[in-house]
Amino acid sequence: MRYLSRSFIAVLAVVFALLLSSAAQAQDTPFNIENVPNIVGVGIAMLPDYPGSNDYIVGGAPFFKINLDSQFEYYLRLLATDLQLNLINHPVFRFGPAFNYRFGRSDVEDKVVKHMEDIDDTFEAGAFVGIELVDKDNPRKRFLSQVEFLSDVGNVYKGYNVSLSASYWFPVHKAVDVTFGGGITYADGNYMETYFGVDQENADRTGLPVYEADSGLLMARVNAGAVLHLSMSWHLAAGVQYRPLLDDAADSPIVDDRGSKSQWIYGLGAAYSW
Image (cartoon, rainbow, N blue to C red; front, side, top):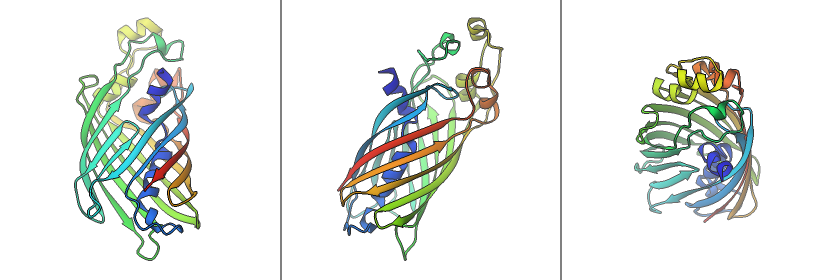
């Protein structure tokens, strides 16, 4: 169960983004779907055991996007552990509250990091704002971008993180859409110190050098993927994401000595829309 739950923090990030965006444009697919406001799915992925690890695990997670009113743009979206509620009825802009369940670090594979003090799971809350620009001549071509702010409300790392992401969609076949995108995440000093710092107690436990991680860029993301529309209701997706750790996160002994700053996620998923 450790492998399954730990994967929820980032598992299938690429695949979920693919399928959720696919649902939003489903009425424009070659299958002549009149309106597909809702989608549910599940996927599996291979990803690092914890941020900075060079040990990989396999896990799975669900997702959904539900339109709350067929006449308006309001929706509820779950992306693994990340939940967003859009409160703006606008063809371009998105805004609303965001919530996330962030898994901690315990019982890991690395024989040194496993001796560090455990980090508990925590809840995060915040908000997101985004845009979606659609090509009027070909609605399957679209650009999406958002900023999400999350703050720890579970009293574990007592800080915050901010993520910027963007992606571009376009069709390459009547039944296939592809996407390319990326993003970057900033974290404050409390976040960085909790997940990448090594205090004296943990240094004594592990033999790693004492290290203080300051605020800064946490990671970048570059991703690519594709969605295959099997029918009006069924969709398959595959994706890959490269997410290198940056600044003090990359220089942490947890990463530099015991793991790797080069992080990869590979995912496959399936979804049903209506």
